[in-house]
Image (cartoon, rainbow, N blue to C red; front, side, top):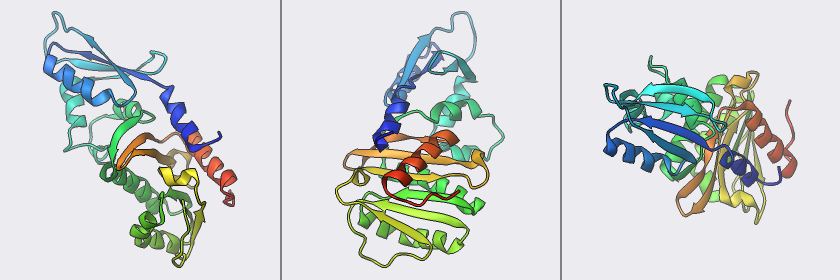
Length: 246
């Protein structure tokens, strides 16, 4: 791995397939619009003699079956009222197949607000676990200044290793318990990322990585793959001389 963009390119190669079994052209077109920016092939199959609203089948990069959901349930999961996944996870419905599908799937039109919501879920997990490493890239010093109070609280935990990354100089006082890593003119000015290594539990590892390719518009992915999170941390620690913590 030679740059943060290498991780995004890894996800780009993992194109997935959503088979939509429906005779409702409006629903089919809506799903095509929603997933065309997620590195997903949307394929259509007619219901034929089957009754009902339809269903979707989720397939992995190699075509392997990952899961199936009724179309009504699938659309409800995607609705603004119930998305994102950390809210849905509190309900009783089995959404594992969809979340595994959306994880490690590109997004290309995330706004700053949407990305902040994803960031908050990762930060919340780090806060609840209370141990391990939390690394966050803020692009610029002004962005870090806006989140300073949040990261001061993380720093005061003591049991959590916290490092923040930015392009340019950080001229303010450094929050207690927080390592500030700055690199002028580096790739750090182009990426928003937050990663938590899960502490002693790899299953809690998670990260989001996004490139700001146009002002306020982000391209990237989120992941709960501990190996991918570890790769991100290893790259940051070796490239930007952050002490590795076992």
